[in-house]
Amino acid sequence: MIENELYTSSNVSVIGTYFCADNIKNIIFTWRLSGRWQRTNKGLKYLAKQYSQLSSSDRKMYKFTFIGSSVNDEKIIIQKFAKLEGLVSRGKSLQFLQEADSGLLVLADGTASTITGKIFEYLAQQKRALAIVEHPYIGKLIGYANVGRNIVSSLNIHLGDELSRLFNVKLDYSNVNTYNGKNLAINYLKAIK
Image 1 (cartoon, rainbow, N blue to C red):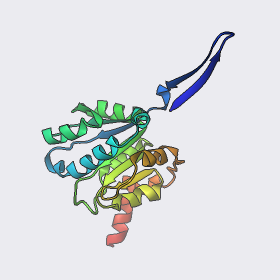
Image 2 (cartoon, one colour; image 1 turned 30 degrees about the vertical axis):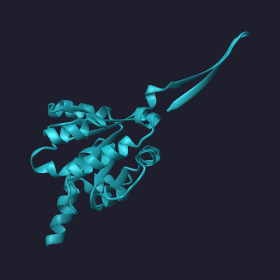
Image 3 (cartoon, helix red, strand yellow; image 1 turned 180 degrees about the horizontal axis):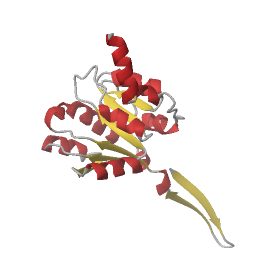
Image 4 (tube, rainbow, N blue to C red; image 1 turned 120 degrees about the vertical axis):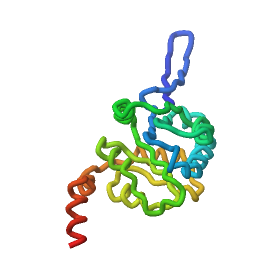
């Protein structure tokens, strides 16, 4: 956020404009892109394109970091809009997540019905979730739990507006327990009886 202050003395008045580091929003992706998830390129390219259209003040406001392994073509895309930390230990990855303001999901192309376990990790840490997906199925969970934003990669949106909405929504984690492992197992057993 850009903040202004007025400084005055008997001889001069100066309006100082500065960037307040406390307002930077850190959005983190903690997962493996390479291997079976190589099909995330469409979502990564979409995010890179949307990020390139942000104003310079929005680029200072929202910082993306990717934690995990990736292949060269993914690295080229990621480095256009994010810091790439690479592979770290599970403990270090969780530390990055705890310090972040939001988790990021970039799902593989063609995964219409996938709800990745990563969303549950973000929910357990009470983090907002930003999902970049081809199909909005995971958005049903994010919307129901009221914990973030779902961006469908086929739509032309303004990323700055979506990020603003992500960080201005009042979160409600009261529905999250519906999705814990024990409750899911109980509901599954009820369904198959």
